[in-house]
Image (cartoon, rainbow, N blue to C red):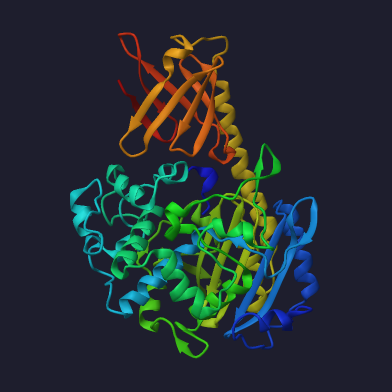
Length: 508
């Protein structure tokens, strides 16, 4: 996806008895000693430093929910506070639900980790015929398909799940098959669709029946379509032009198995209990410990580099399991997965050997606050001296932002003023096509060029220089890329190239 969409990050509180009673069968347990006032003060300052309107946190230790609390507000301008029942989007933290569902189907004998994906999806194709034939369920869940992301295709268009997978065959590989870690949302869609084909139930039904229902996750859903009917939902925000701005909830049903779950920290605490309990919940084995352990086991070695090194900068080694990142943290193994989707950032993180887990949900786009709070929580629970991870990370991120601003300034400096397009504006109108992404339609209306894509995304084309225009998407989270038209010798407009996406050829 575009960089704006990446990053991909104690004592019981007052009233906690009632909250825990509604949280499945969690037992009350004396948590590790800490200063709640100090923790709350740290959380409040971190939220201010990271410009986050609302946050909810739950901590699980030894099969008990020992902390559950909301901070801030659901919506700016409305004093209604976030509480442990407030619903947030969890983004890519959804991936572990998909891998756990596959683990259950492996238990049932309906799927195999190392079976080719075409066993369940006979029509599945990739650009490389060898990879099409050899890609297994494990490969799809381990981000080693050899493919770059290509997320614009599903994010900016309203293609169905089946159509997204059909178009995947046109995405050219960036690396050879199984040679490199490459984060790939569409591979998780493929795994989810394979699970659906193996059972005759769609992915959403499988998640509800195999995970939400047995864990009592009654406030969770697999689509934003369920949210308007709910009374307690956090509203999504993003920093746009340095202002914290309300943005719409993103409907990403077409990539559901990779990121469409919405939940609360109390519901997610039950999910943590299952993970930390080796697949057992409330005395019942929901998924076998052996197959759940497969998801927590390193499958793909990762290069310790940005953006991954931001999350746990003290780590020495990092790898990916199936739905989980794995690395070391101050002498302990940490298993975690963040989630980022329009206006929301989440993190589910565990120290499995210590039976400690935390979930942090926020309503701010592309925020590192969930990782900031995870560090503080882990240090508290491990009785380690707390460090100001928030301050340290703020300095690093500010430095990276400065580099981004310098790069943008370089682009602006290359702008040539007082130029004109080669052709009359109306001659640029037409349909431009790419095999992977489909059609982009340019229209001439009231003296302006307008762009539409995939029945979902609209933009105005603002002249930049010569035959290059800046794309002003209505969805500001898509950024403001440049688009350049190519005029052939006829002369006529033959194609256009969208920055960071590719070339689209004009139809007849």
